[in-house]
Amino acid sequence: MKYSRDIMSLSPSATLQLSAKAKELKSSGRDIVSLTAGQPDFPTPVPIAEAGIKAILDGKTGYTASTGILELREAVAESYSRRRKIEWKAENVVVSCGAKHDLANLIRSAVNPRDRVLLPRPYWVSYPEMVKASGAIPVFPEKCIDPAEILKAADQGAVGLLLNYPSNPSGFVPFDDQMRDIADAIAATDMWVITDDIYEDLVYVEGAALHILDHRPELSERTAVVSGVSKTYSMTGWRIGYSLANTEWSRLCGILQAHSTSNPCSISQWAALAAVEGKADKEKGEMYRSFRNRRDLICSLLSDVESVQFERPDGAFYVFPRLADEADSARFCSELLEEEGLAVIPGSAFGAEGYIRLSFAASDDDIREGVTRLDRFLRRRYNA
Ligand SMILES: Cc1ncc(COP(=O)(O)O)c(C=O)c1O
Image 1 (tube, rainbow, N blue to C red):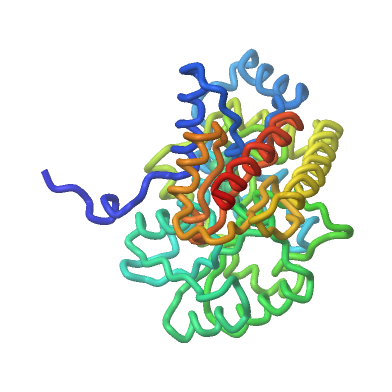
Image 2: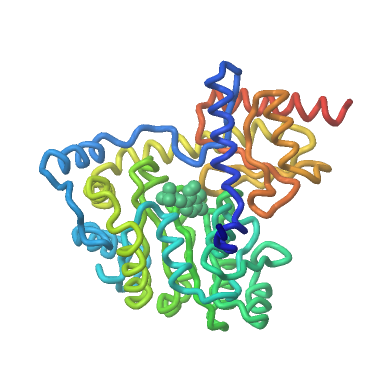
């Protein structure tokens, strides 16, 4: 049998693979500390869980509109119109099975075979594979995103680009003037943009971090915003994300979704509505403060570790240290797991060789123990 060349060119998700490997070793009895998690380690807030239970008991268990229940699309449109001062309506919103699904729909709906799509580094693991799965070509700037790279990519025929701030893997959030320069550069091109804002509520800098649409509202004509409830409300398993885009782009995503997954889980949509309506804002605030404290903890511990350099992350729940003198981060991570029982993700998975990603969506004890093990491993490696 012959298989799809596009699909055969995809790599498995390194983050999911490593988390699974760490879990497997742990269940076989090994003492493993995992700083791989891409999800909050809190239960879903009770008011949200109750909304889900109520949906089941009320019999809201059939198919819904394939783009999602109107109540949720309206609530998302209303909330993001307020947040970004753009006029979005329910018809601009598609609710999907997680933000990942929205991203895949948007990319698939925007590209033609061999189109080039700019992916600033470090990128989230799934972007290049999603682009390739759609028959398009991911292109990477030489340095991390800057306006000149955007203009250069446009000159070389790139049709679109993906932005993700706060960033997974680095937690980086651009300063407002950097964001304005990025927005200005995009405005000087014809490229479409997808902004993956899934960590937008986990920003630890003072004041609001601005968005390209805050600087250049007119870009909303060709910018799709992606977010969801997974990270902010600890709902990764419920699988609800959403996108806001111009009506045609949203319509195409809706058609694609109708012929692939139909609607996202009806029960999860009602639970997500409780989240978007603010029914768990207290719990959201508590989780946010925990992440900020853990960010401070891991940064203070890492600053005593020799042989790593890192920028303090301003958002999300990851820190992305650069290793002194490591050309093969995947090998480094597998030796670290083998020798010290510490699981972290190699930078190579994010297009940034020589780095590792540590998640601080973990208990204080695991963060302390994890950094201790990393330190011990590095001392042995470099002082040997
Ligand atoms: C940058 C980024 N975008 C999208 C997603 C996917 O989110 P969801 O679980 O809602 O599909 C993740 C999850 O790890 C992520 O880190």
